[in-house]
Length: 159
Image (cartoon, rainbow, N blue to C red; front, side, top):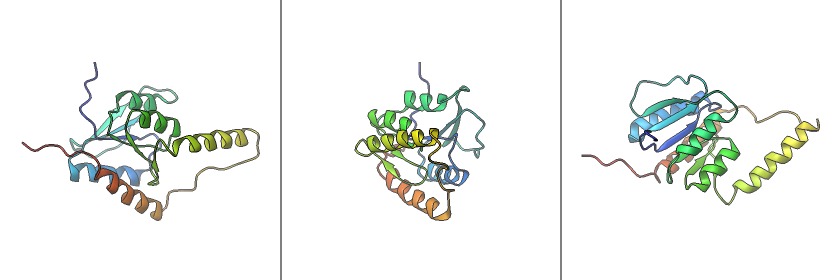
């Protein structure tokens, strides 16, 4: 039985940069929308009922599987993991990368194809390197896109 409270924001926290985590926590507190940070290691979070750390079992993609299993339609998922993004989009979730790029059912297929192509190139020794480091411009782009996505989420009712 799933006893997780209704989570508005799911964060694939294994590779989520600290600056992005901090933005998400501040927004969760401001909007009173619970954010769940899922990782297979300890993720330092401030004490607030709106930032929840959930430890996934050790193993490749365990955190991703946990998010995919528990996410509800209409929730916002923050991840750079394209297979996870594809899974949660099919369940009706919204997806944003930690660089502020919205992923949709329309753009996820080509991105997965490019990811697979680049993996093949790296395996053959033809391509080296990875994503550039996160800079101030990337953080601002995320903050702007995140605010736009937050506006789409239902707000908790006040009693």
